Length: 360
Ligand code: PMV
Image (tube, rainbow, N blue to C red; front, side, top):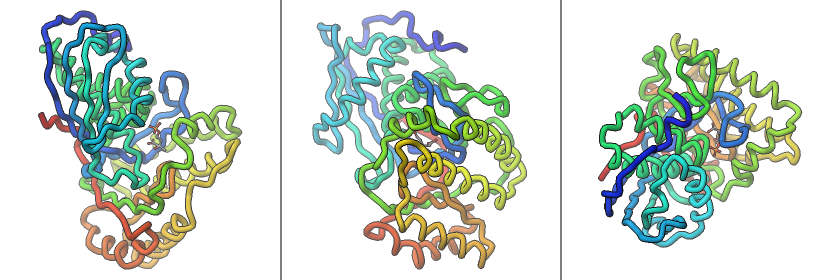
C-alpha cells in the first residue's frame, strides 16, 4: 500500500448535500511520539491505549456550491461559532486536498463538542482531528460505495495523521501502533494499525484516571515540542530508546507482567519530559502537584504492592493506569489522597476503548 492509493481518483457529482456525525475518542500513548519529520512522519514508533469516555463528537454538514476555487467552511464549538479553529482546519484541508479532491466543491459546516471540559488541559486534537477525518471519509464513501471498512479506517487514520500526528491512533482500539518498526508487522509511518499480537488478560479493560493538575492552555504546543527534537543533543538516543521500549512492551503485553509494564510506561513519561527539559529552549511542563502526585503513587505502590502506574503527556496532568480488578482500592486512594492536588478537585475516570463510532 502506498500513499497514492489514498488519492480518490474519480468521483461523480451526484451528492448534492447531506450530513454525518462521528464520535471519536482521545488516546494515551504508552511509548510516546515526540519528534517528527516533514509531513507528520514520526521519528519513532509509538503505541497507545484508545480511550473510551474522552471523546469529540463532530457533525459535518455539506452542500454543493458553484465556486470551487476555495475552501468554504464554518466551525462551531458547543453550538457557537468558533473561528479560532479555522486556521488549523484550513491547513489540514490544504494538506488533504490531493486525497479528497471534492473538498472545494462543498460548503462545509463543522459542529463539534467534547465530552471532556474544554479547558481541562486535555488535548482535543487527537479526538477532534480524527472525528473530522472520519466525517470526511463518510462523505468519500458516498462516491465509492464499494469501499471496504479496512480501507475506510486506514485512510481515516492517514488523514487524521495529517491533521495531528497522534490523532491517527484514535480511529480504532484498543491498542494501536503508529510508526514503522520491525517489531510490529504491517506497521507504517503513514497510518496507525491495531496491535496485531497476543495481549494478556491483565491489560483488558485497563483503567485510566486523569488527574487535572493544570487546566490551562498548554505551555508548549505539540508543534513547538516536536520541533525541539530537531538538533536536540539526545534525539538520536531517544528515537532508538523508543524502538527498544516498543520491543520490550511487546513481550510485556504477552506475559502480562504488570511491574515491568509500570516501569516501562513511567520511564517513557519521564523520558518525554526529560527531552523537554534538555531541549533549547528548555521547559518544565510538570507542576509541583504533578510531582506530589507521582511521589504519592510511588509510596502507595510500595506499601500496598498494587499495580498502579502513571503516564504523562506534554503537560502537567497525570494519567493513572491500573487494571480494572484493582479499581475499587485504587479509586479510594485517588479520592482520599490525590484529588487534593487536582485543580478544583477535578479528575476524569476513563478506560481503554474500542475506537470511533458513526452516530448518524
Ligand atoms: O499529535 P501531537 O502532535 O499533538 O503529539 C502528541 C505528543 C504526545 O501526546 C506527547 C505523545 C503521544 O504519542 O501522544
